[in-house]
Length: 199
Image (cartoon, rainbow, N blue to C red; front, side, top):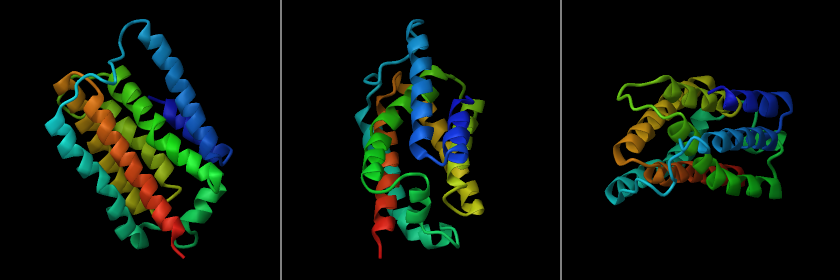
């Protein structure tokens, strides 16, 4: 569970590089996945599809985009624009667009494989992996938004992690989790693109 924390601390805090952070995170996850696959512990990303659950959850996750845009005047740091912050982490021009593509495709699949597949837990109660999943997001968000909104986001992401884990357990696969996670990540990058495109 410490993998994303190390990736964020080294990449984002140490080298001020979102690409290094994401690359370390994905590379380490892939190493874990390769080791785990030999034990047959990874669920297929295609398993567990349930149309009603997907239809219900995907719009709920996508609604994050208009909410972020609407609330951004209250969430944004006082002395820095989002465009300036992202540029400080190497996300501008073509680099930003490539990062968005990676964030909406590879990121949700690898995260679900790692947090809900590899870190499998059948408990109906909140567990450490749910909290750890939210905590690493908070470590990123503290560089982007005001601290009290980080607390709000932490609660939301922990709840999302718990819900995705229950869905994985309920339907026996990651398909619904991945599809709704893609919608959530797409909502974040769409909101960011709208905000940095404003004059």
